[in-house]
Image 1: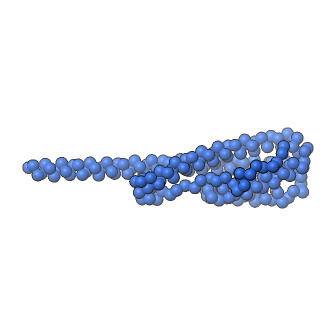
Image 2: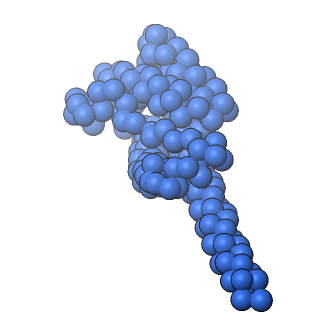
Image 3: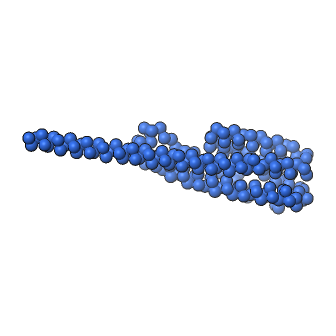
Length: 193
């Protein structure tokens, strides 16, 4: 009877340890999946702000066109960059969004240089309102990108920690990509208003 009690107690202990490991694994997986969803939500917020900016740009361009109709190359570059950004947003491809956003930033910089040559445009109320709207959207994009990158940083750290990395690899959870600053973003723009 004593050996039967010992084997029963040993069996219960082993079962308890296995249950604890299983529950820990389930809890870890659930926390990683929750973080993965937060990353997706953060990316969605960035996409929303990029789309908002993309939607504002045609009005901005049309206002400038009224004053500077011969600047077709700049308008074409903006239209192409907007199309590329919209495609990247639809594909939910962070790397492509980064690249397209950089192209759009570059095209917008060239448009702002064009604006410099037209003082009457800078005084136009529609232009001023659109410029303010665009500036507000740029601020929202910056905040959304910062929030997203913070979430990605936490998520990526958790994926690398042992033994969470084992659960992550079993669940096919992969590292998330950061939104990176566009090339040349460290340079101070020379546009004057």
